[in-house]
Length: 379
Ligand code: CAA
Ligand code: FAD
Image (tube, rainbow, N blue to C red):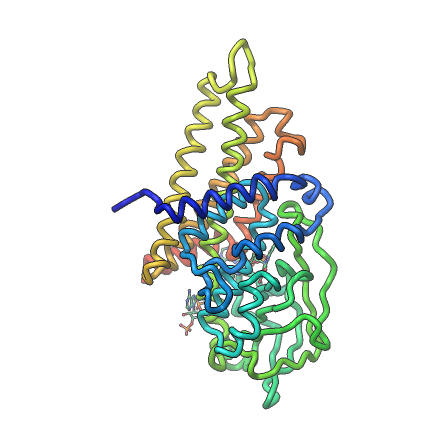
């Protein structure tokens, strides 16, 4: 067993780190404050190949592995989790879902511009009354022969207004329960498709979260992903990889906060010495460093399993469950180490603390990850 990263992995991590420091850090506080979508930064990420990282070059992707994706997600998330959630949704939910289960025509038409960063995608599962309980889909996609008639509302959709391509999960045959659910590709601009107002959020405020409304939207049959009734399975399988991305996002938020706290603790003095010389502060730093390393290993293990074609449902959920706990705990302690300075925006840690919370909620709450892990270990 080897724990060292390859030359290529180190180069990808360095490229992501440089991008984060040079192009994400400037303006990150203002984007958070004004809830400004990082349009320029996302465009640049597309040009650099970070929006279709794991997609084959045949479809305009970068052909990288999931380990590279985890490394890049950690670096982006250290600085700006509002950007990394766009990277995560586009890569591991939308591009992955289309490449793995889409038809050749769907890949040519939709995957190529998404992987090349010309367009952004959104993944639309959650509804006002179906979040954790995702099989209770109220959105309907009635089979009309050559098309589906889509009606309903999706909630909390990341990239809600900036996306062009939406993967929408909807119920076609309620009598078949989750076996009657389909996944459809919906384009912005289809008649009857409307985007609700932007949500005013606690964290990841630069990201673009909206509800979506569908009223008699005609979606061509060729836009269905997979066989009739396979939409729920599609959503679950796709989310397995998405959870690795969000685990890496949580890891990055934690390691970003830790690095800030470590530097601050070496500089700030109290009682005649740097606060890092007080054992109480050292113990906090020791806990942070240990827990972050454990979270990193869980993320890399899940990615390694995926890269090697091995089952990763349990590993991905463990990584997300643990890394998101570590993100929350580490960021709270990072604010504490900064004292009063941690409570103001210029020092960045308060934003990381607010951003950390979402990693325990989206792509399956911590309680849902425990359900998934529990079912896997009892299987
Ligand atoms: N792979 C394949 N199939 C799966 C699966 C998986 N990982 N997990 C479940 N299924 C299948 C089951 O086998 C079952 O099918 P069969 O009857 O044919 O066997 C079907 O799905 C239903 O599964 P369950 O009976 O286990 O259903 P449940 O209702 O008890 O639990 C759940 C399902 C795991 C809780 C699921 O609803 C879930 O994951 N909920 C969380 C939803 C979620 O993660 N939402 C994220 C939205 S996207 C997002 O959030 C993006 C973002 O923020 C950026
Ligand atoms: P609920 O399901 O109502 O849960 C409420 C509480 O009850 C939680 O603590 C939950 O863990 C707990 N709970 C529920 N059921 C159980 C149970 N059986 N056992 C124990 N505890 C339980 N969704 C998308 O589809 N696409 C997106 O792009 C997307 N982006 C998002 C971005 C943001 C900023 C946010 C806030 C959400 C986003 N979501 C997205 C939705 C997200 O996935 C859901 O919020 C999440 O799955 C939880 O659903 P819910 O909010 O309905 O909470």
